[in-house]
Length: 390
Image (cartoon, rainbow, N blue to C red; front, side, top):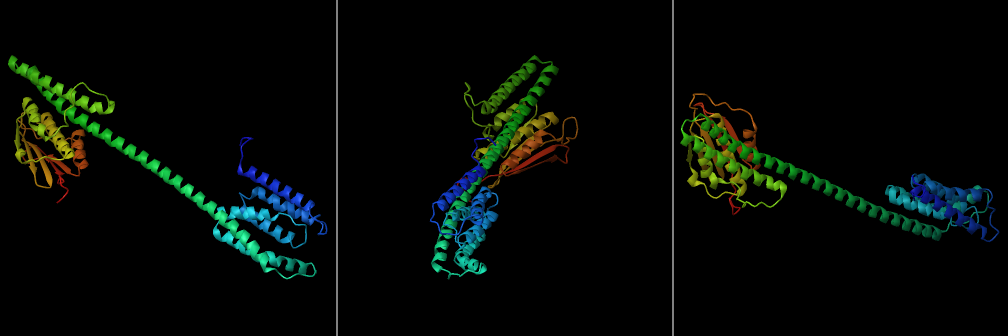
């Protein structure tokens, strides 16, 4: 704690000193004729004011001490003093920080006990007692009720500030969590895009490069090299588009629309250029789809064709697209390989990425070997009507 720091403890010490000084000045300037202050009167004044030092940490004990001091000081006939301020200030803290029944009980005790205290004290001292004055109880009750009301107002204001701070903290935490969730989703989306682009194009390049190395026909070698050049150019363009989202910079190349089923013939042509025959069925019945469904469908077909190029060379692939009114059904199935090998399902990022894409739009995807030794990928993507009905 710094020497100049203004803590609640130091504020209460200064307040106690001011109350004690005010009591001393008042009783010294009071008219003579009252009961001598020494030693009981001075002890009550010092105890009542000194207890204020710890009223923030121990408000209820301090309230009891200040109440007893006031109930003893005034009925014993000591000179008038503002020592009741200690009780009022402590009652304010109790009403602000403690439970409401505590402050109400203190108010009732003072309102009832203050008028009766002179009678009890005088009888105990064997002196002639005076009747209790109802107006005194009413005045004391009004003072303590006003003090309690001020404490309740302070409590309410503090609770509102605490609630506002809690809401702000919760809103900040929610914003941070939402930002983290969006960033994670964006990273996963970019990772899927890069995987789909690179896996498909690099697979085509690899197949064409192998064909160019083993062919003895110059025309076939040049055709393979031309396919490699086109595939690499397309891969670079799509990678630049994906990375441009991260860099947020302008590109000199024209921005092409996101991949969709409208580019399916181009994708099939690239796949067939690698030597893998592709048969497309049902494409004419596919209507215009929402952008997320369209992109997911295109990427699923692309990844399925990539797996066919990798694991089933020289086989025939069937791509079937059907729209049932509520769902988009995609089936990509390749026959038994030319070598007679059975296609085995290998776990990897390709199948995982396809399942994630289908799940991201509320669909599902299943992949498994077929009875004939090939492999089938089947996806169901729900399509919401554009008019919001149905």
